[in-house]
Image (tube, rainbow, N blue to C red; front, side, top):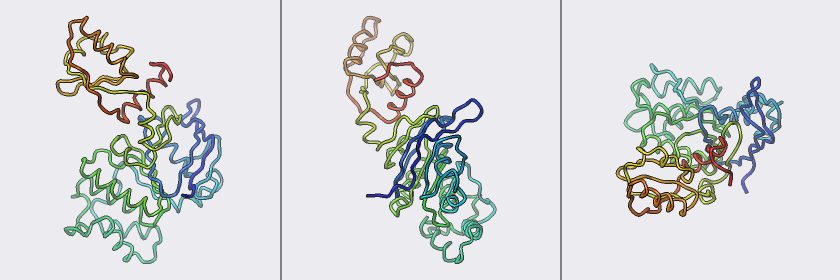
Length: 312
């Protein structure tokens, strides 16, 4: 069995009268790729930093890598790799020069050897990218370099704050291939993201809203447990009728080409809603069942927390 590398109980952080993280309980195992999701301002980034001793606690307790996160944070920090959302390396230097600089900052003895390893691991040796000035690189390659720098000192935990924001889909996929390779070596990877396809590649996902942890499980189990169904309904005009578009039987509607994607809590709710459309002169085709996605689940959980729909 994998060893627990982070354990926190009743972790809470307040700023004045605002509770940013509210009694968080989590256990993260060695080598897990953990996706943290939630709206901006939900507390997910603060929670990640607290669990690793980077942000002081208001209350609660926990350990990271066997050290107390409240009293032994200086012992934890050298074992972490951290990558921010915004690229912050030197654009006028080459890839290799940036890596050399970071390795020296970490006090790595064999700088040249470690740089060569990183260049190969992150595929900068292809087409001579290791000697390319960083300012001329695409966003995807810049983020790959930032990840390589975060891994320079061989951390045991890697923290990533929305690392692929604004990066094209192909580069995002390649980036997550690398993350999965890193996790397979035993490094625990904690990454915040807004992309549902990325979340599905995590071993586990945590959904944080208003500082509270609402979901903590494998993504496939989250989907399996969701009390939702979805269907594609051939229909175009429903959004011209607000009372139909905001029907309490329907959790979510979205236009997709010549059809409406409908999410509800039961097939009966979808069927009765489609039947009632005819009473308003809207004749929809037969609903076709489709898969519920993570975004649907989190949308539903958000509505619950806001009191917009009843609890299940």
